[in-house]
Length: 287
Image (tube, rainbow, N blue to C red; front, side, top):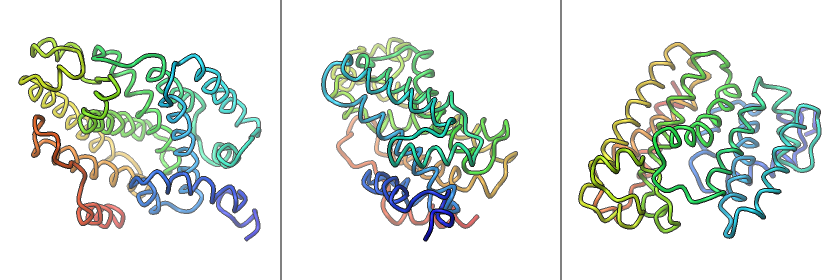
């Protein structure tokens, strides 16, 4: 295939590079995005690659100071995308994506800001305002980029991104409690921990008998966010929202599984069985 006939007109090598980044991550994202037409699919793979790279910078061991220049270089790369400047497979595909779809520069920069929040210091029991800002940057901003690539740039689509992004991030927080605590992090809101009498230190919080009450409160907030996203989807282009519906259904099922398992015996696996993922993909991918 020539560049003129490849998705986004990108080179096959660059398309394969961004696809490989997604495939190597081992998430359901790779298969979930396959319901999209090739141009939109590869634009999403490039956005995922961007998010993966800046997340890896933030999560690398060591102090923040050496990471700051690397994040700042990505800020520069983002601002130059609209001028057609690129220096690697991800940015070369992104240059074509930002020309093809109405994605917005501030959303890319917000993602980097969210990664910086994680890198500057360990987040431990943030207040509700800080937690909401964090969710907006690391999840909702990605949603705002995504819905535009999916094919809907309406205000309702932004509402989908807002509800679904928060719901997904809160579900991730509940799923990753032990993993985060091993890194001296705790993303449960300080106000709710204090109201329940739960200490704000990660290991002590996870061992406290009142922890389930806080987790149940976070889960209820996530359910409300899922409901907000579903309500907004009814005002969106149905076909464009197929990936969002699949993502929402997958994470809502994961949240329900976490709730059935409970918050004290967290050693049981929380991931969805393959058959359930396949059922969700079939149900929502063909709708």
